[in-house]
Length: 86
Ligand SMILES: [Zn+2]
Image (cartoon, rainbow, N blue to C red):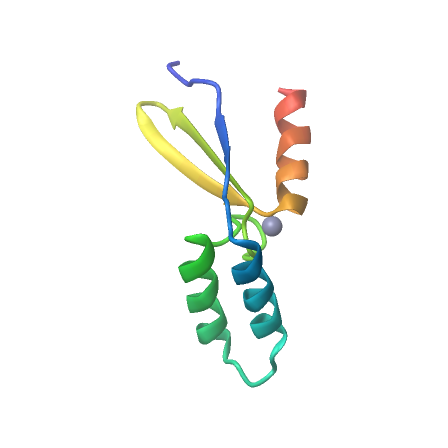
């Protein structure tokens, strides 16, 4: 096995941009696709677990391949708990 320890980094989103994004996501006139596009633009992707705005990037090597996952605060805490049990 060549798996390495996961590396964790923060996704830095400008406060103003984040506020705008959250307001737009609440807007019922925006389609699901338009909301997804916005999240992608501002945060670079979605939470791997729930599809919300991600705040953390977790990357690790699995059998020689680089895996990158993004998590929101809620799912990151879940992930951390699981990781500690390992
Ligand atoms: Zn999540």
